[in-house]
Image 1 (cartoon, rainbow, N blue to C red):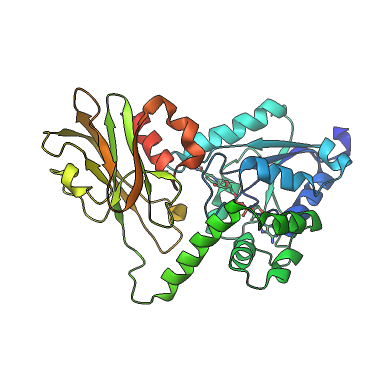
Image 2: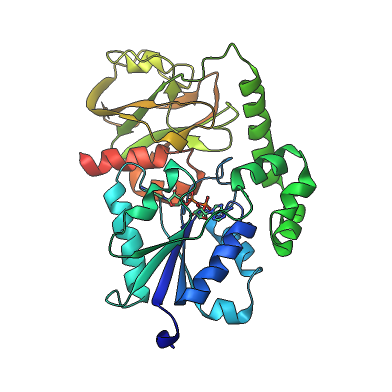
Length: 335
Ligand code: NAD
């Protein structure tokens, strides 16, 4: 009965990687103030990473185990793809999902905690009342993930999550997916302990299309391993992309003349795109003018390379490294 509550619905946006006691506390407080709760899970379809190891399905399953039947009856779960290079579209998507569930003329609140500058998004929905939850016991999902994957002070990490979540996490350690993320954490730790390392090393990415196919590879590099990515290099000679990317991709018939036409380029700088320091991507979008697809082989830094039909890359979205899917989508929609 909407009369009992000041708000018809509260919107609660989060990654919930993993869902912890602070999140649970916010859900309970939202249910005291609103008739319904719309839980918006962010980062849908992103590939597993140290910022987001768990898929949408896993996260929804985890959250549901912490709530009673009565609570669940009042909660809707929705999920939204990040639009890292098109903020307006993300805002529209969130509002669109909410509008599917509730009459937007009714009073709606957005609930959350302004923990740092990354919480700016709580203020981009001026038509919704903002309800600040406050910080619950200083719990932080980044610290929980770090402790969990590096096996540092595990008990304290588990204690910050509801019991069903800690049980779920304990089981998850047996899975191969756990080992893959753990390897990435170990790599990052090693990199961070190397004080001589330049943390802010930008890279060049090369988005190559030919006859409606895109050239993607699987790198041997720890962070990109097991995932599809665009070729990534330290230096690019714009006039000679073919030879610039030899460490990643080799064209089998090295003598063929390839015509790379530069269609567009842009620097992509989403702060969460790389887990060590700041790494911007200077991406060049080339069209390869060639009658048939040139045969490609992996270079020394990659283990697999493939021409993938452009119309099919969305099917691989959750297997594409970091923001590379978002970068390719940005080019495809702007050219
Ligand atoms: P999160 O899971 O870290 O946090 C969810 C909410 O819980 C936040 O309001 C946070 O401040 C709050 N919280 C965390 N710890 C708390 C504690 N101890 N006590 C009380 N509250 C606590 O999620 P997030 O990263 O803030 O989620 C935002 C989502 O929105 C992300 O998935 C992000 O990608 C997405 N997003 C996307 C875009 C875009 O694509 N353009 C823009 C903005 C946000």
